[in-house]
Image 1 (cartoon, one colour):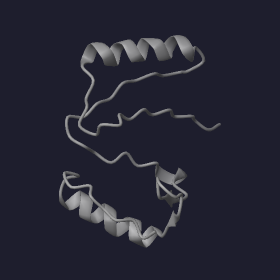
Image 2: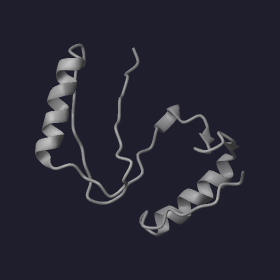
Image 3: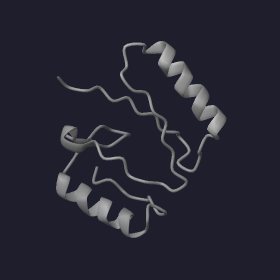
Image 4: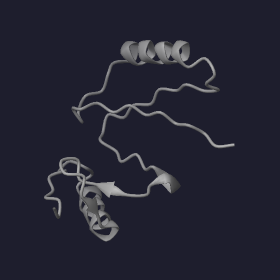
Length: 94
């Protein structure tokens, strides 16, 4: 049987909700999804990449939905990793 994982990310990459807000969100999700076997809250003070794992099929431009080549994506990720995700400025190939 497969798992369903629901992840939330802030629009502002530097925003980290305080512990009270994280707990409140977790409590809400426990009520809204009573069939869930686990509801956890994780936060990081630094920007990190959350990998989709084996479910990653395509990368698309958020503006025009152009399908981005995986080779280009790997190079962009390499550059972002080298700066510890402090410079996320890119020009997509589209």
